[in-house]
Image 1: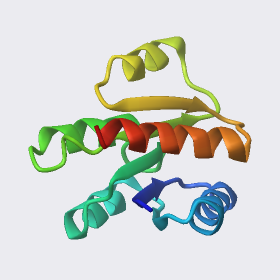
Image 2: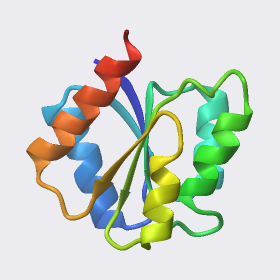
Image 3: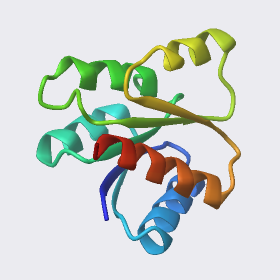
Length: 125
């Protein structure tokens, strides 16, 4: 399947996403706690999809999207941004970002798998 990068600071959520997407989804999954660690992982081996929480220690998932978009080699990498509580303004900002899909927590495993499949299918075109 696909190479995914998860950026989530909540250990339980991170492990749950990792297990669901690797074991059930069959994807190759790496998981990071911070956006800074994610950038190092992207440099080492760019993923086909980045799944990030909005609120992270250090800089936010939204800032991570913006930094990745600045690099011509990475700007094609799609994002699935997840969050339990964001402002309407942030939600509008996410909607305006190219190649970014938003999923509100909590979500069920099927919704996550469908979102990942949809984003990956759209990038294969």
